[in-house]
Length: 299
Image 1 (tube, one colour):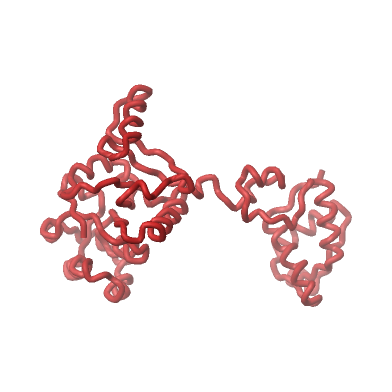
Image 2: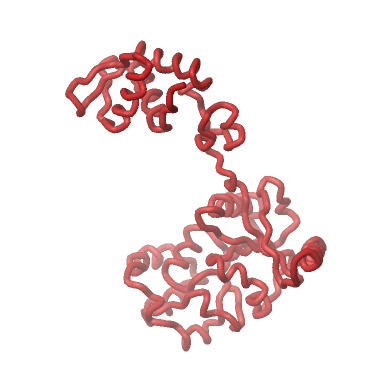
């Protein structure tokens, strides 16, 4: 059995095949990928095209690509033109030897949600109780939720938390809130694992609950404010302005963020303009981890 072609090789063959339908003079300059395909073809005694300029430009033929496609199907049981855009890794494994071609990642529709003993849903308290019985007592349990199965109508407020350590300590920040929020859904905004699901949930919330608050809780700096503005959040959760005035840190206003100021001056909602002015005038900010034990208010 021959080795499998790389996803890049399959993509190039598909691209070239359909390009040749419109223009028989089509060629490619993706030399590294062409060399990989030619090495594969040499094992199978296939001549898929020719060099127009050696190791510079290569022209495939449709008959050559058809030969690759037929041989690949017979040897590996896979159509190199297969579409994996709607596949998970599980469903891709049924179509290919390389399950990672499935575009839908295992965590694409998952978000991380914080449950505390003050979460209004009865199931939250029950989850903490069962968790304590099985493992150890905890003020907060983080659970993965599939956004396709979450009924957003059960919640009145959405809170997105930027930093993972602060998200893990939400139960501490929660106690410092000036105003308790009813039916609050608390979500980690995400890293490379959870960002896709969190972004999709935020969009879904804004579409289906347009008049309900979506709150951003993150660093008090230009980057954090930029995330809140571009994400269309309706409110910010931060310490009181009086406290911020006396506690901002110069080092938390890095030079690489200064480029965001000009656009924020134009796009920042009126309710946040005083906060932006405070940052810019003092040339200082405050990371979320410095906000512990401070009273948190909504802006």
